[in-house]
Length: 402
Image 1 (cartoon, rainbow, N blue to C red):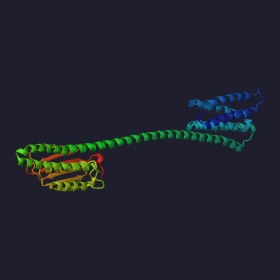
Image 2: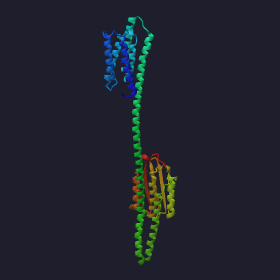
Image 3: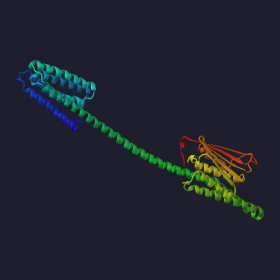
């Protein structure tokens, strides 16, 4: 049995069927009465049918057993018409069973229709034999059948609700376990992303130091070697070389300061245009090159993912203007609109007709291309140097602000 309540119902059901059969047995005339044999056979069929219906059998077999019970109970009503309406107690037990075991509306309607048909026919038989028809007795005994049907429906609905709750609880428990697993995986993924971000930042800083400070320090070593050789043969030439070494040292120190600053927290609480302006002001102070920042659009609309790259590109552009162009002024112009971000760095340096990209320009190009941007340069002798960069907005950048 599926539960104690069903077991208890099953026990009460078979006891009632047997007791009611025994009550009708008292109305017979002994063993010679054909109705006695009918009752004995009915009890046997009730018991067999009961255990079949209360077992896990196919629905068709269970329905067939219920129809057999219906026929036998109808027989009690026709054979014992003198017992008035006691046979309806049988139908009350059957109605509870039918409405408990089955939930198909057509099947329940069929049983209900057959019951009303048999009830009317037996009532007519009783009226023919006794010449009387008791409405109150019909109503009282009929209510027991209706009550049995209601109890069966309630038990079935309760059982179905309990099974549904059990299934939903199982699904909820599985969902909870899956959610915990997903949360654990998300946490592991977040840790991996954090580690990768740290590694990437370290690699970026290492690349900057290698490509800027490392290059200058290498040149410094070479120039010092030249100065040592020239010290004894050409003192004036040695002074010039030492001056170059001094400038290389200053440039390297500036690059180291910038790299160390990037190791600190990312300018929390400072607007991006203020960060760029501070960068230009510091560079101007160190190199005596006039710098100017022109911003068209909202700096706050520039995605966080692009801000470090733009900052490094501007820094490298300023260094390139002073170091290779010997420029006196440099303009940094940023235009932001719905299509993306356009960056222009223009100086008034010496310029050159045939451009041979140095390490700085190559690094700038690589940084821009990493974000799907375009990189272009233009220069003529005596007309300075211009850098044009475009960053198209990516789908994940839309709506991202500082």
